[in-house]
Image (cartoon, rainbow, N blue to C red; front, top):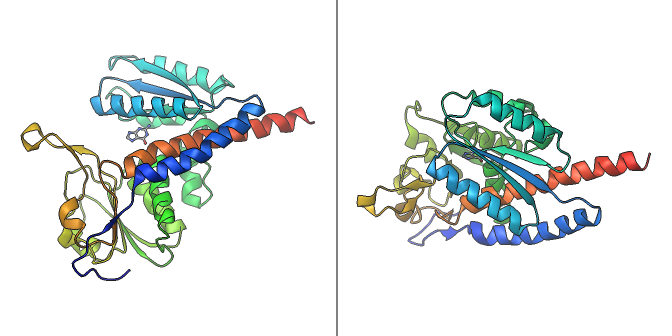
Length: 300
Ligand code: GUN
């Protein structure tokens, strides 16, 4: 990475990369169809969180386009958790379902970890089951969580050097921050994971060859917090208040950051589409594993 001298960063286009990857998925779905398998993903949404409703709608639409059958289960926020557990159990036992996703966050009466751990680890295409979290931590993942998986694909697509790089992740959620750190570590980066209690955030972010922002606070990372020539990955999807235009924006202040970074992801059109793309990839992968197991039994 070279220091910038007045130039602006190149964009990593998540829509373009998604299209490229999804073209390859059509072949895989076709091969599965030849073996009599149609990949199936079940999506469970509890409550009326508007952002979750949009994400679920986009996931279901992407499945249909990719030749993946989707089953959607919508429950009111007041639902008894036992009903959701019973549905998960039925889906675990259904051989036409290869992936099960429970959209987070769940309403307060739910123990989210217990719900995620009720999903069969073989169908856990989000990679949130304790067994899959453990496998990722050991460096032998079965399913990689979709958003950090998408980020790794974006870095790979641009040949960003990871071995020996200083990678700084801001945010320590189970969905993004923690698995992101583990993947970058596995790929050979020296990692720092910052969070709300980090004493001097800018001290850390300014050292980052690769900076991943997954905080959930609009435009928190500004250009002066970025290493000249660094690679900036913005995982945030925040809606600005109506009086500020109501637009979507990331956790990174794009206008100032692009003056400093060498590569940057936009919002929208960056990491967002990649999350859904990697969900499709994990569902296909799961269906392929099921098909492999089935043909192994058939040939005995
Ligand atoms: N909520 C926010 N991101 C995600 C995700 O990747 N998977 C699920 N299940 N819920 C989410």
